Length: 333
Ligand code: MEV
Image (cartoon, rainbow, N blue to C red; front, side, top):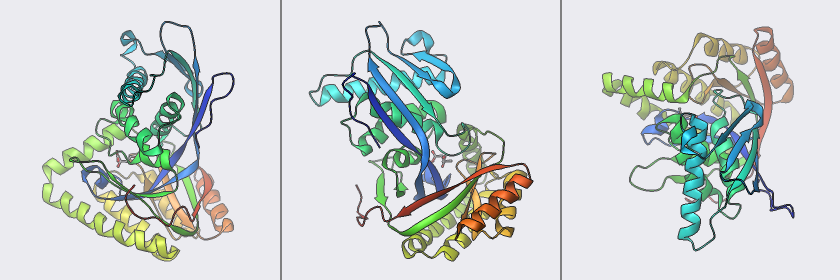
Protein backbone atom coordinates (compact mmCIF):
# COMPACT_ATOMS: atom_id res chain seq x y z
CA UNK A 1 0.00 0.00 0.00
CA UNK A 2 3.00 2.36 0.08
CA UNK A 3 3.04 5.26 -2.34
CA UNK A 4 5.90 6.65 -4.37
CA UNK A 5 7.66 9.94 -3.90
CA UNK A 6 5.81 12.68 -5.73
CA UNK A 7 7.65 15.43 -7.62
CA UNK A 8 6.72 17.75 -4.72
CA UNK A 9 8.94 15.64 -2.43
CA UNK A 10 5.89 14.40 -0.51
CA UNK A 11 6.10 10.75 0.47
CA UNK A 12 2.60 9.35 0.88
CA UNK A 13 1.93 5.97 2.44
CA UNK A 14 -0.91 3.89 3.84
CA UNK A 15 -1.37 0.99 6.25
CA UNK A 16 -4.06 -1.54 7.15
CA UNK A 17 -6.11 -1.81 10.30
CA UNK A 18 -6.31 -5.37 11.58
CA UNK A 19 -8.74 -7.89 13.00
CA UNK A 20 -7.30 -10.66 15.17
CA UNK A 21 -9.32 -13.76 14.35
CA UNK A 22 -7.67 -16.10 16.87
CA UNK A 23 -5.07 -15.98 19.61
CA UNK A 24 -4.91 -12.45 21.08
CA UNK A 25 -3.29 -12.23 24.52
CA UNK A 26 -1.83 -15.75 24.23
CA UNK A 27 0.30 -14.35 21.36
CA UNK A 28 2.11 -12.13 23.89
CA UNK A 29 3.41 -15.38 25.48
CA UNK A 30 4.61 -17.02 22.27
CA UNK A 31 1.41 -18.76 21.14
CA UNK A 32 0.78 -18.23 17.39
CA UNK A 33 -2.15 -16.01 16.42
CA UNK A 34 -4.12 -15.45 13.20
CA UNK A 35 -5.06 -11.98 12.01
CA UNK A 36 -6.21 -10.25 8.84
CA UNK A 37 -5.54 -6.80 7.44
CA UNK A 38 -8.66 -4.76 6.64
CA UNK A 39 -9.33 -1.94 4.18
CA UNK A 40 -9.73 0.69 6.87
CA UNK A 41 -6.45 1.94 8.20
CA UNK A 42 -4.12 4.91 8.37
CA UNK A 43 -2.19 7.17 5.99
CA UNK A 44 0.76 9.54 6.28
CA UNK A 45 2.51 12.18 4.15
CA UNK A 46 6.10 13.12 4.96
CA UNK A 47 7.35 16.40 3.45
CA UNK A 48 10.97 17.61 3.75
CA UNK A 49 11.05 21.04 5.38
CA UNK A 50 13.43 23.78 6.54
CA UNK A 51 12.25 23.82 10.16
CA UNK A 52 14.65 23.08 13.00
CA UNK A 53 12.63 20.06 14.20
CA UNK A 54 10.54 17.36 12.57
CA UNK A 55 6.87 17.40 13.48
CA UNK A 56 3.78 15.26 13.02
CA UNK A 57 0.17 16.33 12.84
CA UNK A 58 -2.54 13.67 13.30
CA UNK A 59 -5.63 15.16 11.70
CA UNK A 60 -8.33 12.97 13.21
CA UNK A 61 -7.00 13.54 16.73
CA UNK A 62 -6.26 17.23 16.12
CA UNK A 63 -2.83 16.92 17.73
CA UNK A 64 0.64 18.06 16.63
CA UNK A 65 3.88 16.84 18.18
CA UNK A 66 7.56 17.41 17.46
CA UNK A 67 10.58 15.17 17.87
CA UNK A 68 11.95 17.51 20.54
CA UNK A 69 12.57 15.73 23.88
CA UNK A 70 10.70 18.64 25.49
CA UNK A 71 7.52 17.09 24.01
CA UNK A 72 8.26 13.69 25.56
CA UNK A 73 5.45 13.93 28.09
CA UNK A 74 3.16 13.04 25.17
CA UNK A 75 3.30 9.34 24.20
CA UNK A 76 2.67 10.27 20.55
CA UNK A 77 5.75 12.55 20.58
CA UNK A 78 7.93 9.78 22.08
CA UNK A 79 6.62 7.28 19.54
CA UNK A 80 7.35 9.70 16.67
CA UNK A 81 10.88 10.45 17.95
CA UNK A 82 11.60 6.73 18.43
CA UNK A 83 10.47 5.71 14.96
CA UNK A 84 12.44 8.58 13.40
CA UNK A 85 15.56 7.50 15.33
CA UNK A 86 15.18 3.81 14.40
CA UNK A 87 14.65 4.75 10.74
CA UNK A 88 17.70 7.02 10.61
CA UNK A 89 19.93 4.44 12.37
CA UNK A 90 18.87 1.75 9.90
CA UNK A 91 19.39 4.01 6.88
CA UNK A 92 22.89 4.96 8.10
CA UNK A 93 23.72 1.28 8.76
CA UNK A 94 22.73 0.52 5.15
CA UNK A 95 24.95 3.35 3.86
CA UNK A 96 21.93 5.47 2.87
CA UNK A 97 21.36 9.12 3.67
CA UNK A 98 19.10 9.34 6.74
CA UNK A 99 15.77 11.05 6.36
CA UNK A 100 16.14 14.76 7.17
CA UNK A 101 13.80 17.14 8.93
CA UNK A 102 10.23 16.44 7.85
CA UNK A 103 6.68 17.54 8.47
CA UNK A 104 4.37 14.55 8.71
CA UNK A 105 0.64 14.86 8.14
CA UNK A 106 -1.24 11.69 9.15
CA UNK A 107 -4.69 10.31 9.82
CA UNK A 108 -6.58 7.12 10.62
CA UNK A 109 -10.12 5.92 10.01
CA UNK A 110 -10.04 3.44 12.90
CA UNK A 111 -11.42 4.01 16.40
CA UNK A 112 -8.57 4.52 18.90
CA UNK A 113 -8.81 1.89 21.67
CA UNK A 114 -11.10 -0.18 19.46
CA UNK A 115 -8.88 -3.25 19.04
CA UNK A 116 -8.50 -2.68 15.30
CA UNK A 117 -4.83 -1.72 15.43
CA UNK A 118 -5.22 2.07 15.16
CA UNK A 119 -1.87 2.93 16.77
CA UNK A 120 0.02 0.27 14.82
CA UNK A 121 -1.54 1.40 11.52
CA UNK A 122 -0.58 4.99 12.22
CA UNK A 123 2.95 3.88 13.14
CA UNK A 124 3.27 1.80 9.97
CA UNK A 125 2.00 4.62 7.77
CA UNK A 126 4.47 7.06 9.34
CA UNK A 127 7.44 4.65 9.24
CA UNK A 128 6.69 3.89 5.61
CA UNK A 129 6.40 7.57 4.68
CA UNK A 130 9.81 8.14 6.31
CA UNK A 131 11.40 5.30 4.33
CA UNK A 132 9.40 4.07 1.32
CA UNK A 133 12.26 1.73 0.31
CA UNK A 134 12.00 -0.47 3.42
CA UNK A 135 10.24 -3.84 3.06
CA UNK A 136 6.92 -4.48 4.89
CA UNK A 137 8.72 -6.78 7.37
CA UNK A 138 11.35 -4.14 8.13
CA UNK A 139 8.67 -1.47 8.57
CA UNK A 140 6.82 -3.76 11.03
CA UNK A 141 10.00 -4.28 13.07
CA UNK A 142 10.69 -0.51 13.18
CA UNK A 143 7.16 0.14 14.44
CA UNK A 144 7.88 -2.00 17.53
CA UNK A 145 9.62 1.06 19.03
CA UNK A 146 6.41 3.06 18.42
CA UNK A 147 4.15 0.29 19.74
CA UNK A 148 6.18 -0.12 22.95
CA UNK A 149 5.35 3.48 23.85
CA UNK A 150 1.61 2.80 23.64
CA UNK A 151 1.35 -0.86 24.59
CA UNK A 152 4.26 -1.62 26.92
CA UNK A 153 4.78 -5.25 25.87
CA UNK A 154 3.40 -5.64 22.34
CA UNK A 155 3.67 -9.02 20.64
CA UNK A 156 4.21 -7.29 17.29
CA UNK A 157 1.19 -8.86 15.57
CA UNK A 158 -0.61 -5.52 15.09
CA UNK A 159 2.31 -3.84 13.31
CA UNK A 160 3.02 -6.95 11.22
CA UNK A 161 -0.51 -7.35 9.91
CA UNK A 162 -0.86 -3.61 9.41
CA UNK A 163 2.25 -3.61 7.26
CA UNK A 164 1.81 -6.89 5.36
CA UNK A 165 -1.98 -7.04 5.00
CA UNK A 166 -3.66 -10.32 4.03
CA UNK A 167 -4.06 -13.19 6.49
CA UNK A 168 -1.05 -13.80 8.69
CA UNK A 169 -0.05 -16.44 11.24
CA UNK A 170 2.27 -14.66 13.67
CA UNK A 171 4.44 -16.19 16.37
CA UNK A 172 6.50 -14.06 18.70
CA UNK A 173 9.92 -15.18 19.83
CA UNK A 174 11.99 -13.39 22.44
CA UNK A 175 15.20 -15.03 21.23
CA UNK A 176 14.89 -14.27 17.53
CA UNK A 177 12.79 -12.56 14.89
CA UNK A 178 9.10 -13.51 14.91
CA UNK A 179 7.83 -16.23 12.59
CA UNK A 180 5.46 -14.73 10.06
CA UNK A 181 3.54 -16.97 7.69
CA UNK A 182 1.06 -15.83 5.12
CA UNK A 183 -2.08 -17.97 5.21
CA UNK A 184 -3.97 -18.72 2.04
CA UNK A 185 -7.66 -17.95 2.08
CA UNK A 186 -9.31 -20.00 -0.68
CA UNK A 187 -12.39 -17.80 -0.50
CA UNK A 188 -13.33 -14.39 0.75
CA UNK A 189 -14.31 -14.16 4.40
CA UNK A 190 -17.16 -11.79 5.19
CA UNK A 191 -16.66 -10.26 8.63
CA UNK A 192 -18.95 -8.04 10.68
CA UNK A 193 -17.02 -5.78 12.98
CA UNK A 194 -18.95 -4.02 15.75
CA UNK A 195 -17.83 -1.53 18.38
CA UNK A 196 -18.97 -2.01 21.98
CA UNK A 197 -18.84 1.78 22.37
CA UNK A 198 -16.20 1.52 25.08
CA UNK A 199 -12.58 2.43 24.31
CA UNK A 200 -10.07 0.22 26.05
CA UNK A 201 -6.34 0.34 26.61
CA UNK A 202 -4.33 -2.58 25.20
CA UNK A 203 -1.58 -1.82 27.72
CA UNK A 204 -3.99 -2.08 30.66
CA UNK A 205 -5.55 -5.30 29.37
CA UNK A 206 -2.18 -6.95 28.64
CA UNK A 207 -1.04 -5.99 32.15
CA UNK A 208 -4.24 -7.44 33.64
CA UNK A 209 -3.60 -10.77 31.91
CA UNK A 210 0.03 -10.67 33.10
CA UNK A 211 -1.19 -10.24 36.69
CA UNK A 212 -3.69 -13.08 36.27
CA UNK A 213 -0.87 -15.27 34.95
CA UNK A 214 1.25 -14.44 37.99
CA UNK A 215 -1.58 -15.33 40.37
CA UNK A 216 -2.82 -18.42 38.52
CA UNK A 217 0.04 -19.64 36.41
CA UNK A 218 -1.23 -23.17 35.87
CA UNK A 219 -4.80 -22.29 34.84
CA UNK A 220 -3.65 -19.44 32.63
CA UNK A 221 -1.10 -21.68 30.94
CA UNK A 222 -3.84 -24.26 30.31
CA UNK A 223 -5.93 -21.56 28.66
CA UNK A 224 -2.98 -20.53 26.47
CA UNK A 225 -2.39 -24.20 25.55
CA UNK A 226 -6.05 -24.56 24.58
CA UNK A 227 -5.78 -21.38 22.46
CA UNK A 228 -2.67 -22.81 20.80
CA UNK A 229 -4.57 -25.95 19.76
CA UNK A 230 -7.48 -23.83 18.62
CA UNK A 231 -5.24 -21.61 16.45
CA UNK A 232 -3.76 -24.70 14.73
CA UNK A 233 -7.27 -25.96 13.95
CA UNK A 234 -8.36 -22.49 12.86
CA UNK A 235 -5.55 -22.31 10.35
CA UNK A 236 -6.65 -25.62 8.83
CA UNK A 237 -10.29 -24.48 8.76
CA UNK A 238 -9.33 -21.18 7.10
CA UNK A 239 -7.19 -22.92 4.49
CA UNK A 240 -10.03 -25.35 3.81
CA UNK A 241 -12.57 -22.51 3.57
CA UNK A 242 -14.68 -24.28 6.22
CA UNK A 243 -16.72 -21.37 7.55
CA UNK A 244 -18.78 -23.43 9.98
CA UNK A 245 -15.64 -24.74 11.65
CA UNK A 246 -14.13 -21.23 11.71
CA UNK A 247 -17.31 -19.98 13.40
CA UNK A 248 -17.25 -22.71 16.07
CA UNK A 249 -13.62 -21.93 16.78
CA UNK A 250 -14.43 -18.20 17.09
CA UNK A 251 -17.02 -19.09 19.76
CA UNK A 252 -14.55 -21.34 21.57
CA UNK A 253 -11.88 -18.64 21.49
CA UNK A 254 -14.39 -16.19 22.97
CA UNK A 255 -15.08 -18.63 25.84
CA UNK A 256 -11.36 -18.91 26.55
CA UNK A 257 -10.94 -15.13 26.44
CA UNK A 258 -13.82 -14.75 28.92
CA UNK A 259 -11.84 -17.08 31.19
CA UNK A 260 -8.99 -14.55 31.03
CA UNK A 261 -11.47 -11.86 32.20
CA UNK A 262 -11.01 -9.68 29.13
CA UNK A 263 -14.62 -9.88 27.95
CA UNK A 264 -17.38 -7.48 29.08
CA UNK A 265 -21.19 -7.70 29.29
CA UNK A 266 -21.44 -5.57 26.11
CA UNK A 267 -19.09 -7.89 24.22
CA UNK A 268 -21.05 -10.97 25.36
CA UNK A 269 -24.30 -9.27 24.31
CA UNK A 270 -22.90 -8.42 20.87
CA UNK A 271 -21.55 -11.95 20.31
CA UNK A 272 -24.91 -13.44 21.29
CA UNK A 273 -26.82 -11.00 19.05
CA UNK A 274 -24.53 -11.83 16.11
CA UNK A 275 -25.03 -15.59 16.55
CA UNK A 276 -28.82 -15.17 16.83
CA UNK A 277 -28.79 -13.08 13.63
CA UNK A 278 -27.12 -15.93 11.73
CA UNK A 279 -23.36 -15.51 12.22
CA UNK A 280 -21.30 -18.71 12.24
CA UNK A 281 -19.50 -17.47 15.34
CA UNK A 282 -18.32 -14.34 17.13
CA UNK A 283 -15.69 -13.14 19.56
CA UNK A 284 -13.97 -10.04 20.81
CA UNK A 285 -11.01 -8.93 18.72
CA UNK A 286 -7.91 -7.27 20.11
CA UNK A 287 -7.32 -6.68 23.78
CA UNK A 288 -10.96 -6.71 25.00
CA UNK A 289 -12.19 -4.77 28.03
CA UNK A 290 -14.32 -2.90 25.47
CA UNK A 291 -13.32 -2.34 21.86
CA UNK A 292 -14.63 -4.46 19.01
CA UNK A 293 -16.32 -7.78 18.26
CA UNK A 294 -15.84 -9.78 15.05
CA UNK A 295 -18.48 -12.14 13.65
CA UNK A 296 -18.22 -14.37 10.58
CA UNK A 297 -21.16 -14.58 8.17
CA UNK A 298 -21.54 -16.45 4.90
CA UNK A 299 -23.55 -13.88 2.96
CA UNK A 300 -24.16 -10.15 2.84
CA UNK A 301 -27.84 -10.44 3.94
CA UNK A 302 -26.74 -12.15 7.17
CA UNK A 303 -24.09 -9.48 7.61
CA UNK A 304 -26.80 -6.82 7.32
CA UNK A 305 -28.90 -8.75 9.86
CA UNK A 306 -25.99 -8.76 12.33
CA UNK A 307 -25.40 -5.02 11.84
CA UNK A 308 -29.15 -4.34 12.34
CA UNK A 309 -29.19 -6.41 15.55
CA UNK A 310 -26.21 -4.46 16.87
CA UNK A 311 -27.74 -1.15 15.82
CA UNK A 312 -30.99 -2.06 17.60
CA UNK A 313 -28.91 -2.56 20.77
CA UNK A 314 -27.03 0.72 20.24
CA UNK A 315 -23.77 -0.60 18.77
CA UNK A 316 -22.15 0.63 15.52
CA UNK A 317 -20.59 -1.78 13.05
CA UNK A 318 -19.41 -2.37 9.51
CA UNK A 319 -18.87 -5.22 7.07
CA UNK A 320 -15.48 -6.03 5.65
CA UNK A 321 -14.34 -8.66 3.16
CA UNK A 322 -10.93 -10.27 3.47
CA UNK A 323 -9.09 -12.67 1.14
CA UNK A 324 -9.32 -14.72 -1.43
CA UNK A 325 -5.86 -15.94 -2.18
CA UNK A 326 -3.04 -13.76 -0.88
CA UNK A 327 -0.13 -16.10 -1.39
CA UNK A 328 0.52 -19.80 -1.81
CA UNK A 329 3.72 -19.38 0.11
CA UNK A 330 3.35 -20.52 3.70
CA UNK A 331 7.02 -20.49 4.56
CA UNK A 332 8.37 -17.96 7.07
CA UNK A 333 9.19 -14.61 5.46
C1 MEV B 1 -3.82 -6.41 20.71
O1 MEV B 1 -4.31 -6.07 19.42
C2 MEV B 1 -3.50 -7.86 20.78
C3 MEV B 1 -2.90 -8.33 22.11
O2 MEV B 1 -2.62 -9.72 21.94
C4 MEV B 1 -1.65 -7.58 22.48
C5 MEV B 1 -0.48 -7.88 21.56
O3 MEV B 1 -0.46 -8.90 20.88
O4 MEV B 1 0.45 -7.06 21.55
C6 MEV B 1 -3.91 -8.21 23.25
